[in-house]
Length: 84
Image (cartoon, rainbow, N blue to C red; front, side):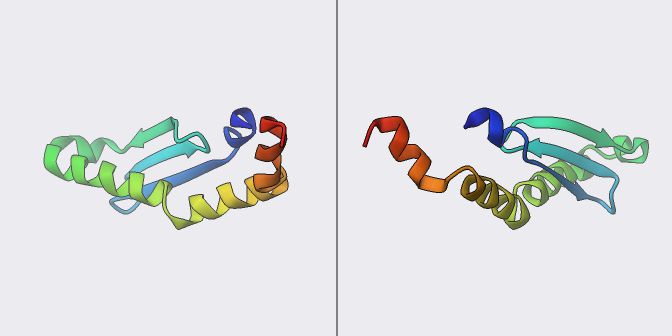
């Protein structure tokens, strides 16, 4: 199941697209893109990273994960793992 969730990918961005983070369904950070113009102000960059993370892991991401779980058999799949 973890491998399947790893195929779900969502990008989040902030600072008008100058900071982009890509997260997979296991909540692993798999990509980072930072425009050079963001490197001159540490506090703005830190805030933009936090905003991009929230964007990447927000409702769209949760909906993608729910859809993937449903496609994989949802909670019924977990019952099969426990022998019930």
